[in-house]
Image (cartoon, rainbow, N blue to C red):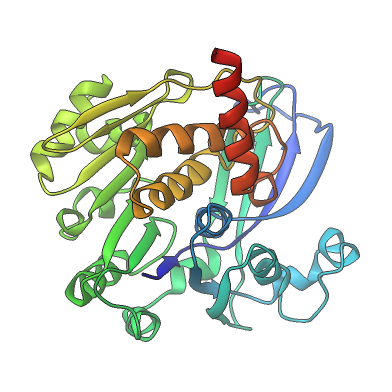
Length: 319
């Protein structure tokens, strides 16, 4: 079994603020950090740190080489390789990432407030230049039993899903950000796992209560398993035969930027190892809780050993 994450790679500019900028307001930032990010990159790192062999596919431009923060950290070169180096440091295969000199990499402006919450403004850049031909090239060599992880920060999503389905891959989708094209996608019924938060669930279904969101999604996609994250209320897994809940781990949040991506990677890793959905929720929830205690995105995602140690500590304290 191999894992392919076909997804976004972004340059994150993270601003520390007392509160989110309001309409018409000019607000000073207490700090600025420039990080590697994008839901695709974060999910690849999470899958790899959870213990899976991962290949990442996507597109970037050369503009990353102009970032002083990354250059002084040792990521040198003329092609924005610091995004690839973040993946490679986590053990991810980057040979299916295309660097296009005529395109700009995806960017995100992230505000982190004093409560640990965030809001994100996304410029997709090269992530939205992915073509069906790119999908065909990337999927060569993958087949039945392999895992494909996707998000909605890249173009040609329907074509990628359809091509992967025909090859027999198992498909996990984090439908973020939800847009009009996704709402009317004909490829969603082909997805094996739909991993989303309650806001995205509400956008897809028009419902607000977790149980009703799950019911509506399963009615629409009866062959798809739903994993709904609920922030401080934990998470729920639902398919046609099983529904189970996991409470959130009580922590003081510092930065929630990559929490959902961490959860997705660890949940899938646990399932593919043969763990039950309940066990997978527990592992993923603990990993996400550790992530939000550390500032940053990909760099905040914990290693598997750290997550396992936290779970063992929890068991000892409960005895």
